[in-house]
Amino acid sequence: MSTTVIGDARALNAGDRCDRCGAQAYMRVTLASGGELLFCAHHGKEHADRLKQVALNIQDETSRLS
Image 1 (cartoon, rainbow, N blue to C red):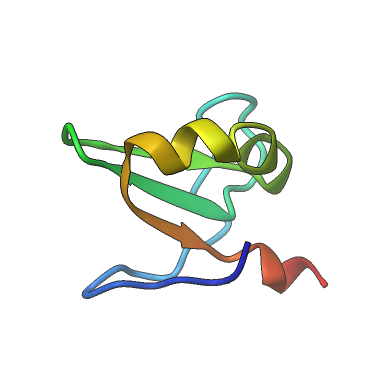
Image 2 (cartoon, helix red, strand yellow):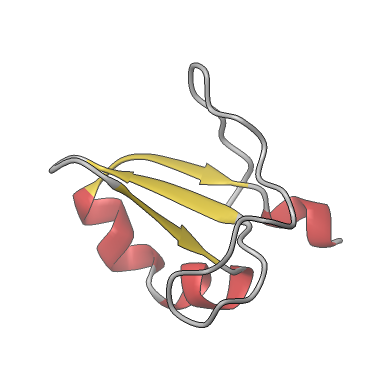
């Protein structure tokens, strides 16, 4: 995945936490049905295929880990 920022999306920071495990979030998923989910790199990658099916936008900042 690559970094994708659409519109007014703010950069993720250390205060943004993964909705699955509480680790620092590096992915923000805006759902087509409304709302958003935050994921660490591990859980974002684990659920990437399903997220692509339901997402309106995926902001992926995992490249910051390199």
